Length: 66
View 1 (tube, rainbow, N blue to C red):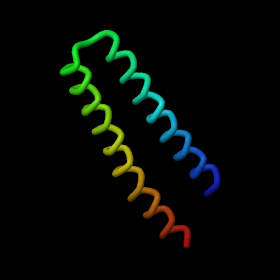
View 2: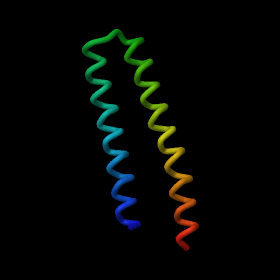
View 3: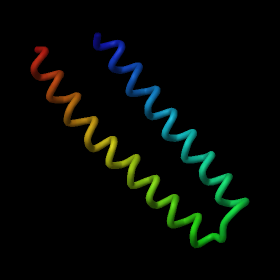
View 4: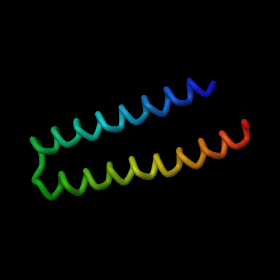
């Protein structure tokens, strides 16, 4: 089970990073720089929030398991 959780976390992180680069590339083509920066800040904020939510949850699960 632990291996699956680690895999899922890694997969989520990879998808977020790829989404970040894809969004940056698309916005660079379609929008002015200010809009691109604003959206990138929002996406980065979402990424940070997901990490901050995921890490304590995993730590709590790990403590319960041991």
